[in-house]
Length: 50
Image (cartoon, rainbow, N blue to C red; front, side, top):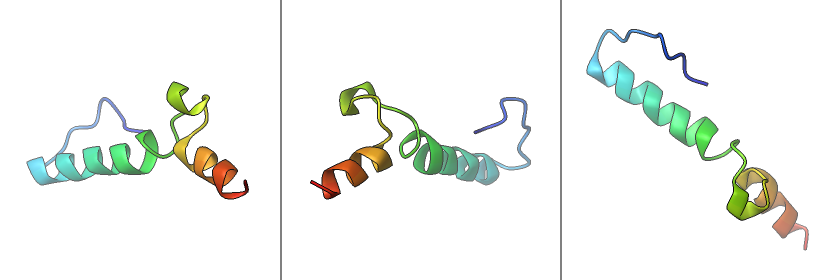
């Protein structure tokens, strides 16, 4: 997760941290109500075994 108190030295450093948070945590690990409260990875694994 991101640290809300982090001060970034450059705009690029901030953009990289935000991108990594969204792509590596928020979209992949966060549970989504539209997926039955599973993370996208859990949902994908469940549907691959069907």
